[in-house]
Image (tube, rainbow, N blue to C red; front, side, top):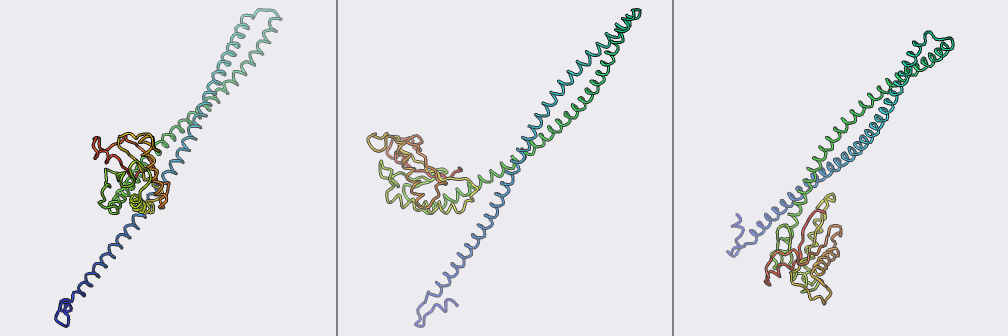
Length: 343
């Protein structure tokens, strides 16, 4: 039918209706793929939000358990001090009881040996007996106090054992929560790794196969000549154009990554190992590499990137990726590296 419609009145072939059909089919396919992508992003954001809430709850529980553990340890220290004080009091009381008991025994012995003494001796004996009676009464009181102290000591020991059991239970709960927290943090690291992969994939799409731009491991590398003139730290027009593309990708990344994930885009400046003359603005390769990384960070901020998500570092000539002494090695070592990492 499409073929019959494709014929013109004059007998020639009209390709326009077939082209319209193909374009309509392509448009429907693109709309379907966009719908699937939006749904995927929606469910992913819900899952990340749930994990963040669980992580916050775990952190609060750990803080509460840590406070309870500190209180238990403080209470146990007070209990141990009380036990020591009671033990000292008990020992003192026992010594006093022994002294009084010896006094009673001595008086009784003296009284039995003075049976045939005179009336004056009987009066003295009566006085000694009164002293002995008072001493026995004091001994009885001390015995009662010792019994009470022993009961208090037993109660304190039981309280101390209960405190130690609670301490062990708290330690076990903290250990369990720590394990769960480590799992949650590992999930955050995996999420950041996924965002890093998406980010570098986006940079590859934006920057394409431009000469002087490449990926080395987990870093995106610009050769210095792409952004700066030789020996300078001011961005050239071509470099600003490349950083405009980078700033757009970083801004998109800021909107996607949840605020609970601490991350930064680290900008590292590197030079080759040939020393500077020392007569210009920069006295060393360290100065030059740091100034270039700062220039990149400052320009990204002017293009809307948050300063909290940027970090500038200068490494001079001390982190080469090519140890050779050729011009090609020098060119490869003069570079600006970008790395998405945790803060």
